[in-house]
Image (cartoon, rainbow, N blue to C red):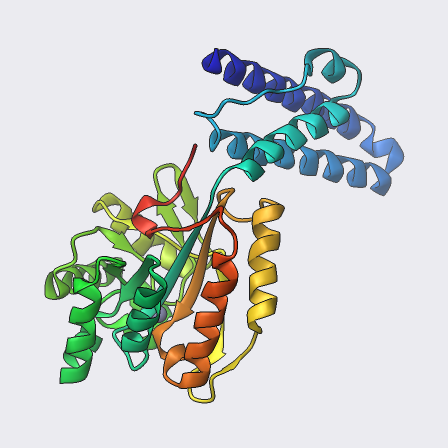
Length: 318
Ligand SMILES: [Zn+2]
C-alpha cells in the first residue's frame, strides 16, 4: 500500500516534469518571434522544473511514511501548477508532523571555549558534533585535556577537520589533493577518530551517498579524493558568528533561532527537517558567549519535536 502511494506520487511528479518540459519546448520555438519576453517564460519554466526536482528530493525523505495524497491525476491534466501545489502542501503537512533534527556542530576545537561547550551541553543533556583540528590537541596540556573530555563524553561525537587546518591557506592546501587527504588521515590517526567523517576547512562542501555540493571549486578535487577514500563530507545550512573575545554575536540568539525555525518551516535546508548549524569553539571563550549558547539551546528545546542528533546520523528520513 505504502509502496503504491509512493509510486503514484512519483508518477504524478514525473508527469508534471513532462508537462513542464513540453511547455519549455513550446516557449523556445516561439523565442525568435517574441524575443526577451519568452526568455522570461523559459526561465520561469526552468524554475518550476527545478522546484519539481527539489520536491521529488523532499518526497524522498518521506519514503517510509504513511502519506495520504490528494487525488492529483485529474487535476494534473487540467492544471499542473495547482496539482503540484496540492502535492507540495500535502508533503509539507506530513513533514511538519514529524520530528525536526538539529545538528549543532562546533569547528576548530580543541580551543579555549571547548571545555565550556562540553559543560553547557552536558548540563542541557543534548548531543553535539565537533570537528576537531589535530594539531590543536597537542598545543598545550589544557587543550589535550579538553580534547579528552570531548572524546569521553557520550553526548559529544568527534569528527575530522584536518590536522593542520590548511594553515589557513586554503587555496594552496587544496591545490594538492594528495597532500590534503594525507593531512586528514594524519588527524584521524593522531586523534584516534572512529568515524570517517570530515568537514573541510574553509569550504562548505557536502559529499555523501549521492549528494555532491561544492561551494568553491578549489576544494572539489580534494573532496572527491576523500570520497574515494571512504570519507563522508558535511557542510552546514546556517552559520552563527560571534566575536570570541568580546562575546558579541553577529546575529542575536533571537535572529538565529528565527532563522532556524524559518528554514525548517520553508524546507530550505539541504535536506528537509534536518538542519546543520555551524559554530566555532573559540566563540565561547567568555561568559557572555557561553550565556548566548545556553540561551540558544533553551530556545530550541522549547520545541518538543526538535531533536538534537549527531552528524553521523545525517540525514534522518522517515
Ligand atoms: Zn575551521
